Length: 370
Ligand SMILES: Nc1nc2c(ncn2[C@@H]2O[C@H](COP(=O)(O)OP(=O)(O)OP(=O)(O)O)[C@@H](O)[C@H]2O)c(=O)[nH]1
Ligand SMILES: [Mg+2]
Image (cartoon, rainbow, N blue to C red; front, top):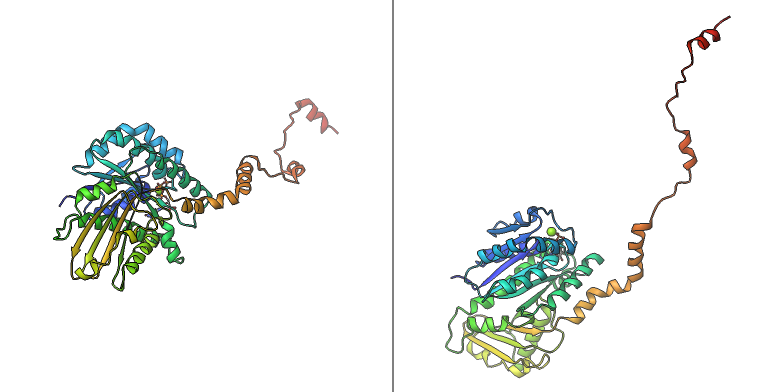
């Protein structure tokens, strides 16, 4: 069955996320300034390489220029690629140059050029090990994304969530695992809308209502096998909001939400909605689905319309503020630094070609006259 969500990857991280989405049967495409990056994402069939570029080298201004100079071609590429989707999610990392620099303007332009399709974002927030330049990129990009009007859900994929769990993992393992987790979360809620239930369906319109909400969205799942009371269940769910692959929920203000239960009938009664939303406040609208199965009882929640996570952003920005002077000095030094040799006098010692003085023949002859 055709999926109603499309994934457009921009830059390396975006292409990697699109690759996994393609494996799950999503319509996908990627855009990059660097062919060598995009070419490895073999499952993504539609690719646009911005002509005349060779990567953005972590410079957002280059990404931005790539859109400025090529937006007509890029918009047609996206229009031609995605058919019959209701939501397009643009995936990119916030701390590089290509995805981070291109995506905010690109999304803003697509909002005017893809009528009838909601547009959201999957934006990767870097882990704790990245340096100042990446942090600056991420903060700038997230600020720009947060200011786009009419944008649907923004999924903030937090690489640090996995880094916290396994500090020893390689970058590659962290990236692969977070790409998988985010696409699995989105794919799962989309799959649920295809199931039927006697007890309450969570259909595609419900999902699109939630995902169409402006603001930050998270999807989290938890098994509730050991839960005995409603409070246990509420606790498990709230834990899943802290431990998901997305930036942890840290404040109140959910606008639309979904609660999906899958499992044996008897456990379904333990879900007490006011208890679940006690800490984050009850949403304006709630969409529920109950699917009775003889599997481990699992609850998936979708929270949409959350504010951008101030505490998480502070953690990202803090090390810049702490090192403000040192960083400013580094930049100043780049343009002023030079080396003065103490032996410049010695340059005169170096061999010089002899000058040949030509005299007159008569003077040479007289010189040897005895
Ligand atoms: N989750 C995830 N994060 C990634 C992945 N690849 C890179 N990253 C993150 O993205 C940052 C690097 O950004 P890239 O996506 O490589 O940058 P780009 O958009 O290609 O831009 P340039 O390489 O500067 O042209 C890293 O610091 C990581 O935070 C990935 O596959 N998954
Ligand atoms: Mg790159």
